[in-house]
Image 1 (cartoon, rainbow, N blue to C red):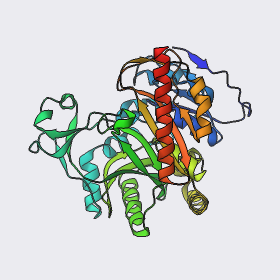
Image 2 (cartoon, rainbow, N blue to C red):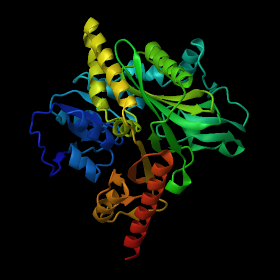
Image 3 (cartoon, one colour):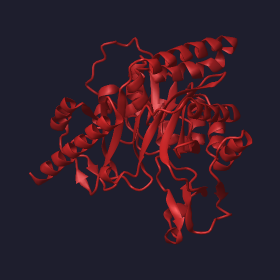
Length: 407
């Protein structure tokens, strides 16, 4: 295991405070850190090209246990985690013993990742909640329930509970059953201070989109900000504030919901930096990791923490009332095994279409079928325009890959 750095030269020199970032994929968080005036030191599963451009990258020899060894190599600085590590509370606590954690500790993770506890907390507050059945109380295989791993991420391992799933691989790991809800998948992003949780924004979620090669129920992108009426927004705010208060959440967190056109029902709590944050950051022009830092530090500030809330309310109002573009991101998955060509030509061409690539694999990388290739981001003046740009970019990337494979 060794530390590797990109050729990127920081124009800010060494004045930026360092932040250590761990997760399955950490590119988005690393770029968020730079927007917040931080110098990211990162370790993840991919080590993509643009991650090396944005951060100092520490190699990872095993996931997730290798993070504890990587942490010992990093200089003294705070740390945070992205997707996947919320399911490894012991590792989070072990690293947090040695350095300041900007995020939720293991005891919070264990509770808020328990579907029964979350459902009970919401119902006791008079809020909508999906019905949950534990593994020892399976419902009939009628297709009205979902089989879900209790330690999953990104929609992996979820299946409709019917006769065909009696031997599903998820049955070999901790799991539960959740009521199957019909509607539009959305995600609400909050930042919780010592005093209260603030709604940052809501995004539409892309889940299992076939044109992007995603498996059913797999997260494959976000589009936002998504607009609601004042009453609907207040309902989502109540959900976030209830969860933050009951479980002691701090900093940025996300809640996945199903919106039926009238109200939104939570189906998952993600107590960490979530994938849709970079969409909201770009749309609202807000450095959300700066507010994550201030929110986490507010727990040490006592009465002085009220200033954080006042400042955040002001900045959120300013962002919401300002001119906002629609921003979208979508993950392209491999339809079959491939060896990645150099992405420089297509990366250079896409900005002319109002799009750009992220999570760019190294040339020669081997990507198995069903695994992510790259992410496309786009902006537009409307949802329709943004979706059109994303689709056009996807076709161009797939055509480029196909052409390179045939040459």
